[in-house]
Image (tube, rainbow over all chains, first blue to last red; front, side, top):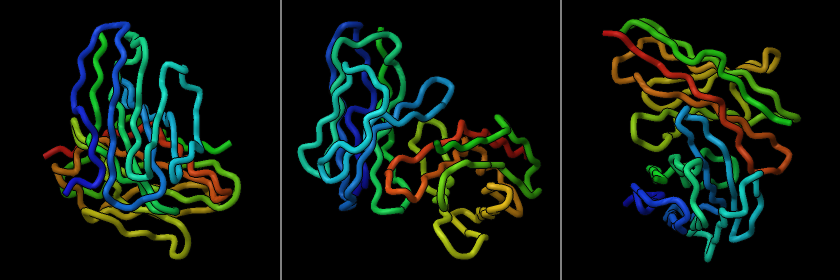
Length: 111
Length: 114
């Protein structure tokens, strides 16, 4: 069973569209995250939820909106996509001071 | 503010030789320190962590890391490198002040030459 699963794995879309990425974890972790990895492989945190409560909200355009319907799910919705949004988006989860478990990533390409 | 630095973009080492990937950090209070590995087109995988206790931490795939408080370092090491160790390695730090935010280093590409 995949511990942290993201869908879709690849997403190619036109500028201006709205898209969503879904993430689910079956580890029973309380905390989930979204990270963005750019073309230089830099990892930047975007959001974090702890038990459905938003606890980290970095400087991210408000076109990005996370939603956590329950502690096992954290989705990312992006409005009005721009070329600069092209990146790999990783979902992760953790419990207490344990390490992260990452999903395999969603490669978003905006054309 | 917490930060983590990986001073080397790339480390090359011959197969069978020992390897070191460097990491230094800055955090208020006691740090929680982590190493992750990323293979091409894959997510990051947890290698090891230091929370408290013994300064030498052993992890997956024969890797270990040494926590050095005076030098604020947490270098990743392996006694004998394998070609299959070639990947991108990330160091991460979190403070113990209650925030759940982990800061990642910029990554070091390890290339093990046959």
